[in-house]
Image (cartoon, rainbow, N blue to C red; front, top):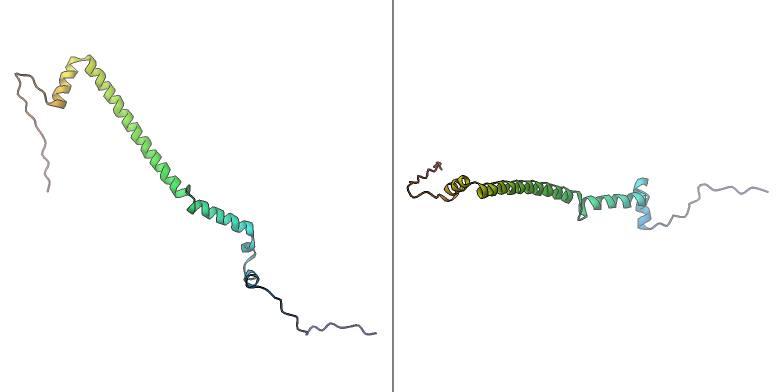
Length: 122
């Protein structure tokens, strides 16, 4: 008996692949990994498209710092006003000085001269 020999020249039937399967054969292996693709999509979404993205977070931090500076400035103004109020409540000379400086008041026997600096605008 003779052994059947394999015909290596025989034509193989063509593989039937859809258009997606043909395209997937050309992609590198790391692009076929669904976990890598999902993770990459998630990272891109969180960095650029999410309402709490990095750019918005930096903007909120800078606004927060500006508001803190404004709060400190206003607190200092409040402290200065309280000190001035305490002086006005306790010292009669400070009341007179305050009235002269802020409201341009004068005594009956005084003349008031107001000097202002003139700046040249050209």
